[in-house]
Length: 135
Image (tube, rainbow, N blue to C red; front, top):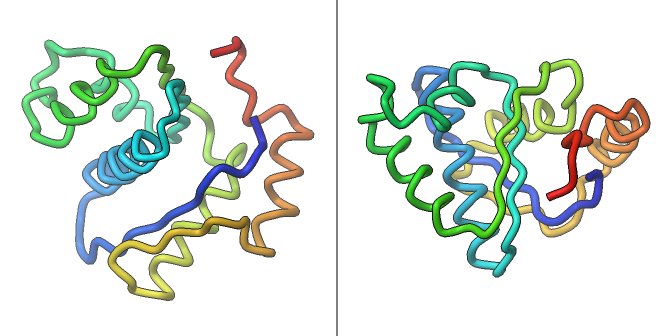
């Protein structure tokens, strides 16, 4: 909804985009659960990732990361996973690039980095981060 809660990035080294995005979703979900948030909105620019999280019968649903995400989401009161085009979520792209620059395993941003604040505001103004329904 455009309000900064917590940002993070993780350096994974060599990995497929699919697995890297699953790690990103799992990390974010675990961080939110540690802070006792009871509603989760996951925005992903990877439609395959969104589909596999919803579809428990997919062949990829047997991947440990997918099972763990599905299990953690089942513990939430309300959750929503939505596909969002990459161009509509530039703040996420910047956090990802920062992970490659820092090469720190997991880095938390409790305040929005300056380079993200303006882009986050643009994403909100365009309506790019609106879930389409209230959680």
